[in-house]
Length: 227
View 1 (tube, rainbow, N blue to C red):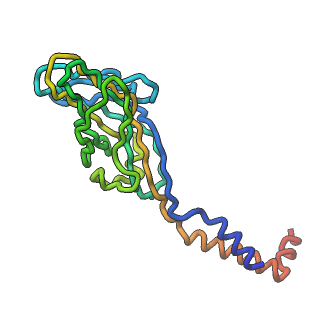
View 2 (spheres, rainbow, N blue to C red):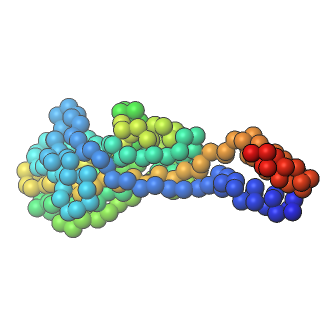
């Protein structure tokens, strides 16, 4: 009987240090101005992966053919308090529409936003966007949060001002058409839940053990009969 009671108590204990992940699309898209750069049109279109796009026109003839930040925030995460963030992966569906043969369009900034501030490492590697056809690119790691150059807390990621910024550049500097389109900004967070307070589970063992003792001694029926 004691073995059965102990087994029951063990089954009540949740998984300790359980690994989990959660994915969400930005709930709010916005243009964040940078000096002498080009603004994104329809930035809220990144809020759904549906084939409608935020767009920036990088056509021009100067070295300032960079975009403003396209920022995605308000992901609505609800990661349990005390969890350890082990990885973050950002995915974006995007493409370029270029008419000049020498007008390559590349990523220039892919960074996280913590507490409303762009921070950590820039994971852009200057990749050239595909022309006319959308491609989904991913950045980050499922197991190594350090690639972002920071260690965010669950509370910071759950906050509405957590997010991602993206910027692009047209490096041909011609006056021909050179547009960038972004469909969505999606973030997957990988985390390990905090270890539960084992003092609480010790109390459960004591209560179950006490009930079993009263049952074994025949005292439980007597106590119940009094009521």
